[in-house]
Image (cartoon, rainbow, N blue to C red; front, side, top):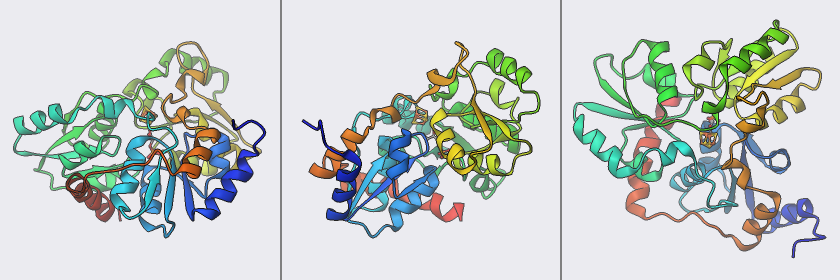
Length: 311
Ligand code: 13P
Ligand code: SF4
């Protein structure tokens, strides 16, 4: 039993003993963000995973993020506290169906959001994150036809913003899909001076009300530079923990779902990771990400192009 253990102290002891680095995404529980060596968005976390000289990467995030760490740092042991921490975008895009979609459009390249399986990365030409997508898209010749998957909302946002038509895979993030436009407008009416920041995984009817649209780290930067002292945040609410730490005098309000509060927008996959499971993962070095080398190399090609083009 773990009862009576000082989990924070035990995790600290194990991290030193195993020469481990703890990486956490902004959507993780506050207690996991607080003890991580580094907290970041998907692109930052990929770069940290690639550059670390630790022997073990304990990834507090979802499986595609831990897989990305393993693809970029194959000699490290990569543990994920809960192997069931998936992603609705990954689930929406089975590799066989994606391969068929590609085959039906042989004159298109596949620009693919990092929120997908290693198999789908292997079937793609270039990976993007929400913080790098516009920069990468701007480097692709104008006459090049593009398939964008698996997030139709991010793809739609990029198409509207850049004027480039893309063939979209019909996947969605269940978390960002759950915001209610009606409830958001009610909240805005109560705080008319507060800007709205939204993640581009939100549907168009949410993004169109936003003063700022960007990745988690982009939203965090916006909170630091925004006018006024109150921000309405349309992304997974755990990011507000970092805002509250960095900006204790400002006020952050999570955008609501249909029930009028932001709790329905907690990512159920991210929430699977807990202090207890992180402790066990560091103690046992399990559950571990393992990947067949051929698949790793196929996926690495499209990830390397992202890292090159993102600059
Ligand atoms: P970013 O942190 O790259 O903005 O990604 C958000 C997300 O939904 C991760 O699952
Ligand atoms: Fe996937 Fe959405 Fe959860 Fe991110 S927030 S891991 S995109 S389900």
